[in-house]
Length: 169
Image (cartoon, rainbow, N blue to C red; front, side, top):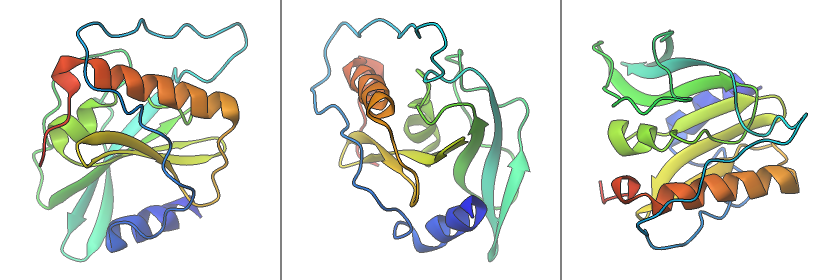
C-alpha cells in the first residue's frame, strides 16, 4: 500500500496526502537552537535505525536505487545528488520511527527533494513549502500526540538553526 502511495505522490506531485500538515513551528530563526532530545527509557519516538534509497525518475518509471552509504541520522555531512541517469525525485528511508531525525532537514535544503520516512504505523514526508519546513502524514497514517509533539520540536529546532533557514527554490 505504501509503495503505491509513494508512486502516486510523485506522479501527481501532491494529492495522495491526507491529514493536515503537522505544524512546522512557525518561529523565525534564532541564534541558539534547542538541545537534542533525549528519549525516555523505552521510548522509540527518536529514530535510531535507517536504510535509505534515492527515488529516481527514468523516463516514465520511478526507480528506488538503494544507497547504503546514505546516512542521515547522527551525521551532518553535506549531501550531494547521486551520479546517475534520471531525475532525483526524493529520498526514501525505512526507519523505526515516523519522527524525522535531527539532521533530516538537509534533504530538502541540500537536495531540494522531499524525504519520505516509512516506519511502523505509516509514512511521513519532510519538505519545504513557502520557505517553511513541513512534515506531512501519508494517507492512513495516524500520528499520536507524542509523535506530533516530537515532530513539532524537531521542526522548531530546524527553523531555529541559521544554516537551516529555508530559502526560496
